Image (cartoon, rainbow, N blue to C red; front, side, top):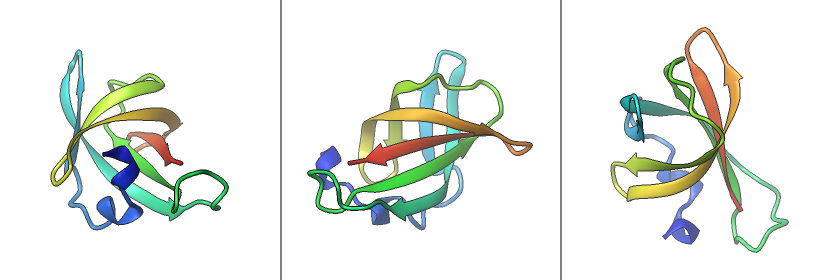
Length: 95
């Protein structure tokens, strides 16, 4: 399933359309960036997304169950990359 995802699966989603479960509860994430990556991996079209969620709780680096409105539950490796005034940002690489 993960190998079938494309950058377009994440573009155009409504803010907060993605959700993630955390021991403190379920919270919404929004896609703030989706970009292609150089084709240096086995994946035909590698890409990355940046997600933004609330400032707290901060998700640790690791695999998290992300609920996608069209693709269902996705187990993705997320890395926190920024903590802004708007919230926390995470990057997911698909390669």
